[in-house]
Picture 1 (cartoon, rainbow, N blue to C red):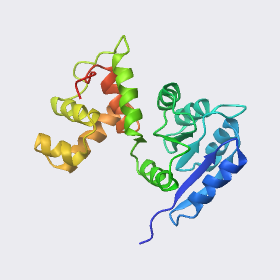
Picture 2: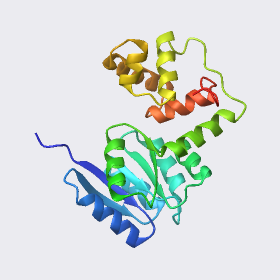
Picture 3: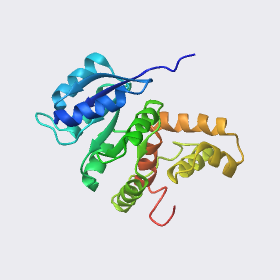
Length: 220
């Protein structure tokens, strides 16, 4: 059975960069580049009409920047997922991208194979950010105040355990081993946790765990 095609859009104001990324992705048998956008406003409009699975979104673009475009897209649809791709690894960009609802963050100097893999990872519902960037970001979130409090009764004791392990970066198999339950059961718990939080993926659940004080600096 043939793999389902992943429909991708590339948004970047530099034509050469936009064309280069598109060419790399289009060469893959399971990736279909359905659109290119030169600014954030065009990107939002194209997503509304074409509903791609994944968008590679530059940060610095005219008319509407990539972070504002990402926020607009994620607010209007849960079907399209965003990877922010930028030349700038500044914390404020990473923070802004994830706050806007992006599910991935990559630097433009990433190897082409990493960009290709990132599209596939994001398309299947996972999140992807460079581990060093993730740790720096989460420590910053955990150190910020005031921190919201986890609502009593929001999660069952088991769900709280699973969320804590997710926030520490454990896989479903690792969580299952630690809690002595099957990976399939862990997956079910994670799905319920994401639904209760109203977030799209494990990364945003992790951000919640840090902001709520479930995980704190030095406690991971």
